[in-house]
Length: 519
Image 1 (spheres, rainbow, N blue to C red):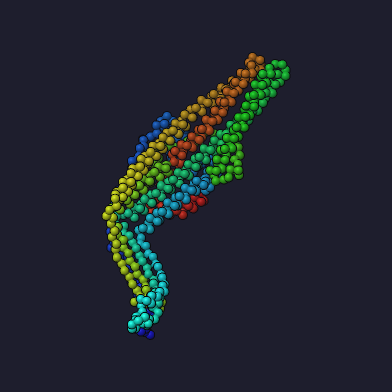
Image 2: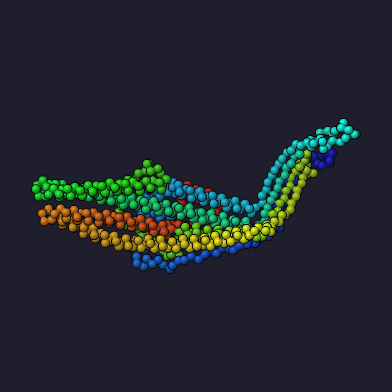
């Protein structure tokens, strides 16, 4: 083979010495990596939460056909309403608040990836080419006395540089790993927020839906009443024309009729508002959304309540509060690590030559490696203050977690008692409706017989209408209260759905499920 003047093999692969030497650099980091087993700061233990052995109200309320199993999956399907099922599915894919919460979760999951990057070295490449010329006044040499001395030739030169640098901050005290914990648990809390938002808007939709159907029932009731009052007005008018009734009776009958018509119109205003709210919850413009009338019928389904301790696993807001406690605990370790020195390992290698043809030859290779130890000697108490701040924040999140549990227990008790009392009230109100209708029939017959004046007819008719409206309102409240109870119990959610610490950053699957409405 032909030899170059410097005696190197012209046919050898270019840059082989550079590659072989640079490959040794990662091994220089192995000994420090063995020092990364320590993590300062407290290890996490889930704080205790206030709970009870059983719900107090359950002892006074025994629903028919009790079930021991918890609600699973699509909780709204227990109402067996196909229209409601269709609307609830739209919340997952079209509700803008749910989509906002989903985007915030993906943001939090991406922050985990950023934190994890600190566990690995950073490698950078900065290839450069420079053309320079030194000042001739610095390079000239006088050939004799005077100013007419000779000058050297051009001093310009080219410099080709192909450097690679690696920097690695060794996680001796666990600051980076604690930071990963902070972001992972924060992302889990964000996921719980997403699920809580989803449950909240699904429950709000169901409440609005049953309220709207209750107004449909009230509208039908008022329409029937208007028709009945019209007949009463016609009867009174005929009696007046026959000289049996007074003109005052006709006026009273007409007043009653028009008052009820006004009530009927007002129901339309309330119904329109609920319809518009449902449109917004399902991500549709209110002007383009319409629900056909369908009066509310039936009674609430049986809702299995379980035991109070179940709430710690079934409520996404409780799970989110607990994950924030874990995140605050890990942050104490991050701040505590600042007390200790940081150790950074830096290395660089590359090729440098003044001629491009020589850049990939052996003599162009250079490298350097060395550790840097940094320690804060005085900071005016900054680190100590940051640790105290982190500990106080942890204690605040513990209190918030326990308060969330207490609020959840209160909500469940409120809704159980609400269903129990409304069930009893509904039974009594049904008897009142029957009695009021009997009074209407009796007084109306007596009026026709001339033994009662028309004022008594109007009085019993008004009582009967109010009783029927009250009965309808109680039915609506029972349905909406059952929705509130399901929401208070966490719907069909379970803490097992939280992504694990190792997979919290894997968001494409969750994103796809939301986009397809499969959650």
